[in-house]
Length: 262
Image (cartoon, rainbow, N blue to C red; front, side, top):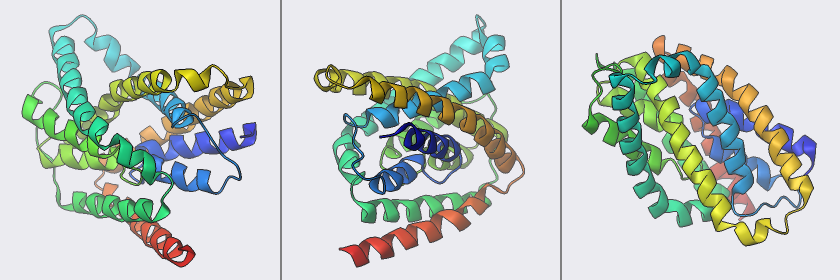
């Protein structure tokens, strides 16, 4: 994998991580088109996610500083931990199937259609009045489970979690922000898991791979920050559902193309 490939994949990851079009699906399809692409497990993908998680921390830095040391901040931290645990239960259960799906374009295409359908439904989800101070455990459970399901390539994490948040009554902008924040501990946990799972293979990994990871992380972080602003605007202005006009046709195209190849 060249540095150019790492930059392209990083930008692709950053833009699609928060736009409801499935970063994992786009990464899987893009990597299939790169001759000889390989990585230990999905470690490169995990490192790109670290870049986008860093974008969230920077994007919400003022809010995070305001929460630090306060009762509301501790409560939110507890909610994030609870939601992450729900994500982990589902994510680890589906991990084997999801990893295999990264190499099956037909599955990715079908998942993209599901994502587009879910995103389209958000047009009819008005959201509610629950903000950061009134979000409850049951609501977080639903959003956390939705995030766990999104481990499957082609299922958008932001699309599913934002739709779930709106469905359980979160205020529109908070549904987007909570989706962003909930992704940070999940990404950190997945990265640590990938490092531990591939420790033997990593010992013999060439330095060029780590250079590619660093470059890709930077590209993902910068493009991810821009995507965060777009998503927050789209959810608040009730145009989030329009992303389905991209996701569903893309999914259909991938399904048709994969069917012809097979």
